[in-house]
Length: 408
Image (cartoon, rainbow, N blue to C red; front, side, top):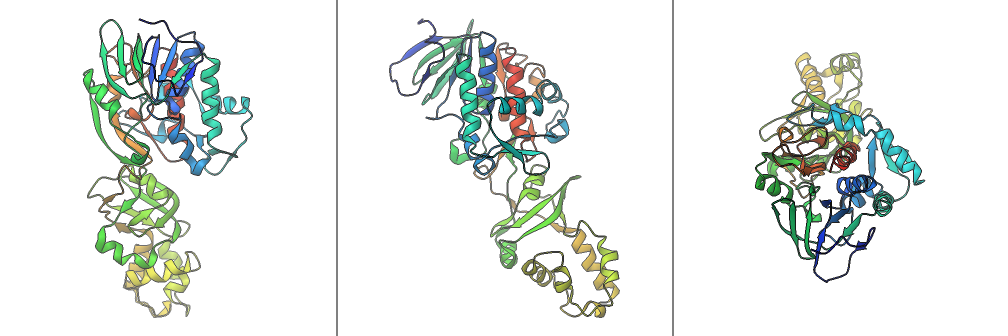
């Protein structure tokens, strides 16, 4: 077996078939994979990263509108969804947002807080990818691009077969992500490897994804399409206040993306369109006015939305003072509890994350190592830990990558 290739080499175009021995093989050069590789390399481990694309960090580059929402100041276990809500606590405590911010500052990457603790690069998301690759270079990590894995075997060590040659290592890290953003080439590779080694995988579904309302309901919402409103969206006790965007297919916007991770087919979502008001008290206080309900709502909501929404609910177009008690009560109830049952989601093609994945009961929360397959690690989105919108999923990539990188 050929000795480990030149330390720090980044191989992207060579076509000779290689057989390489390493200490650690990481499959996937995304956020979690690169970060883990750099951390393992800093410990003196010989690390090879295998990436099937021709460039690293494809998902990083498009994140945050191209500016990468790389962490959240307030990230904690409460920001994540998992069958075991306690699993992520250890990794998050060992590598915090402040730790990653220090790394970003070390590379003099300028950033800003947009809202709600969300940190974005002032410049391009590519700065984060470049930083991770430089960390790998300094740690003498080899990254091999255009490398498709054909299979994984194990005897005394892990043996990875690829179109770029074969690789063996005592430790194998799976950082291949989930099924979200399918146009980027997402696959179920990580789940297949988990099952191959006898690990349970929890059912997956799209998360942080727009919701659809079906052809009939979408036609009803045609007049509202393109309008965004500040609202509270809730589902199964989880609620988020941000913008709700009406689309030609249904609902989107940050508040909807958030609750989509809690939604299942047949569930209803509830929207409060006047979160700063007690709807009943507010309408009662305005009852003596000549203004119509639509024009009154236009003081709080976009005018086109207010008028189309009143028409959608057949609310009388007469002055508010002419409303009956029953009509006023109904209007208030609809404003604070507009109940909708989505028909589905826009699927993995538009989903930002994948819910479910490798069962956390199968992994060590300290190291991310598989309990039943020593030396095998799973990090990032492939694990059943899914963050809320706003930089939390990147923080999980850093934290889980760090945990594995200290052990692999």
